[in-house]
Image (cartoon, rainbow, N blue to C red; front, top):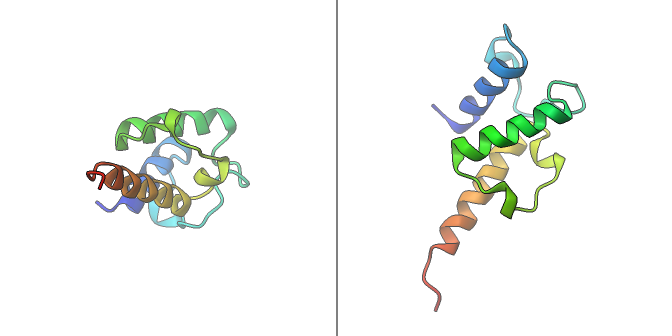
Length: 91
């Protein structure tokens, strides 16, 4: 399953029950449209952290990083790239 689909499916299952995942576009603003409230955002961050092994306590993130599925995927990709780069030996 692709990262986009996995995140979309989780959001639909948790915050939009009964909605087919195909109806949630990657660019749909989850915050402005009330899909994810501030309390739900904390739950989403906790799920992302545990599911994708992201140490959010150590990262500089803003609500914009969770505004859409596309933004969340971009955040995960940035984390994976920086985690991969930090595991390289220093010259």
